[in-house]
Length: 223
Length: 278
Image (cartoon, rainbow over all chains, first blue to last red; front, side, top):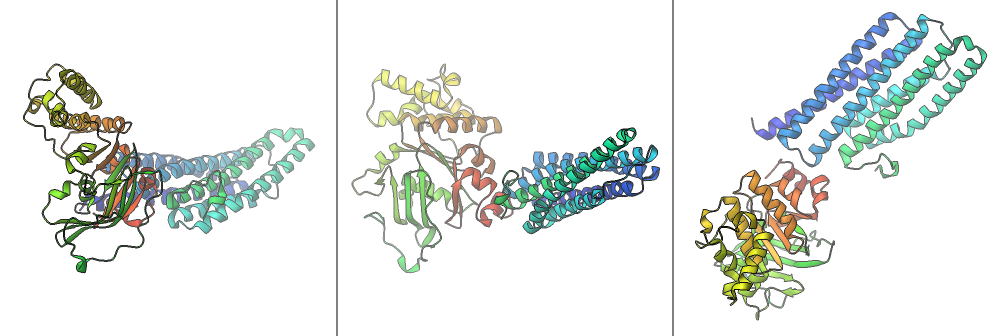
């Protein structure tokens, strides 16, 4: 086997690992949303196990990236791919953390005094999950239209988050005995919003990877 | 185009037409201007319609697979290829605004203005001192104080002074490979050329000696315009300001080194740099 062929196999393996990590994170968000709907101890435990898997995956991907950089001296698009892989793995790991946080908060609330969810909460969760799926699609295909969609969806998560905050603040004002539970719910809402932000960060990273354009602070540059 | 366009009879019947897509790089003002340049070894055309503006006091790297014409172009800049039987060219190369093919120009004086360092170090079997002053002596300089000063300046400039100052009268052949290459650079810079051409100057050196020569190149560009041919992509990326990629005798892409190594415009360039062909 030629050295170049081996290098391309390593890059393909790395790409598969990122996709697999994205899939794990998608399941973690699914568990978090399910936990908001119907929190159970089993869901909480599954979320924790999945989060451990996501953390381990990030370490493996980082290690692979370091090895490829050290031994293969990647350049141009290969170097951009490795840099993006490390960044996306870090973003996915943070999304995994947020998903677990949501599961934990939902479980706490269920174990204490169940409170009413804001009407937009599940919609926010589904939108954040869809954004992560789309950003991973952009990672695989380099489809700029998908990236554009993720970027355009992000303000919607901001609006839904604000609506949720208003709802929770009003409920806190009405019943101070439930402030602790609502504070946990606030944290869950905040985590969903941050999942949307991280999905956008992944989408932006895919533009760097595929087009060598850094659009993080200027979305108008997206071709 | 120069009034003097060919050194020998031109095999024009066999010539392909110049490529239309090779616009000259329009960056900093050209110190070396390569203008619609074709070059032939007898009937074999080695360079096709090369247009390049090489800026002053910067390092310009030529990269490309073996046989792509990069060394051929380098050796044309000081007319080293005139020594090859059947060598022939069309187009022009101008240095500091003047054609190097002017009939009244002596080639030896051109080569004093445009020094060259080769792949394999080639010190003369003389002392370190005599190697450095060789060019000055052939120019008629024999004043001991002038020569002493030139030796120190050139060896300091080549980052060799500290290692060689106590053995100047010893044979240059006793130096290590890396030291010999730096001595050759000292010999080239002692006559204060305008341009320094380097043809794979580190290919025979170990990584430590390579690092020293690369540091030296970065120092040299403060005084000289440097053009380097290298097969080492990392070296081109590290030391050069501009990079030109050649393939099959054609200039495929010429741009800032950062652009070439992060986001080249031409797929062939990217495929070569990433090792997918060549």
